[in-house]
Length: 174
Image (cartoon, rainbow, N blue to C red; front, side, top):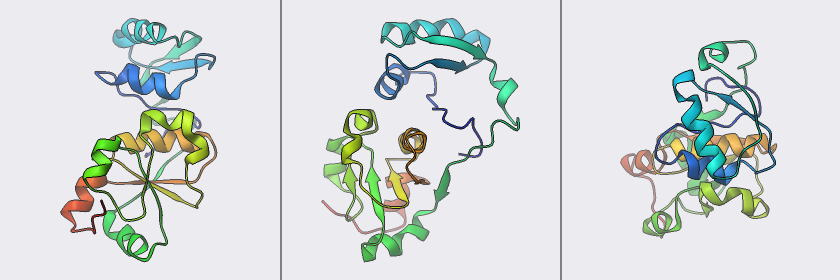
């Protein structure tokens, strides 16, 4: 959120890396990795296993962090600032949790498209400027924000996501 290369996507290494990367990176997309050298080989292996094999270059994260090139940002908001607009129906909210999570409770008026389904459902992303993205804690929505921003959509990540909404006493729709 604070600074990244324009058009870049962020997928933390670990358990959901192949799922997240495979759902947002096309098999024909050119890939430049920003990864520490110790994680380079396993990252490449995971990408190749899911068919994302157009890896053209890589650099250490330290080469980009704080650089002038890493000037793109994703706007964020606090749930307290969003609550009045949601209550009045003036906010366009996209909840990127799984449907089972969404069905247990969500912000009133929210549209649900799981972050791993966005690429195939771009025509269902609601119109609105900006689109407020929420997930459980703010991490999946941050990835989805980067993806939608790359597609030219104006987005705002809801800091803390659904957990922050519940904690603040936000209205729950089912």
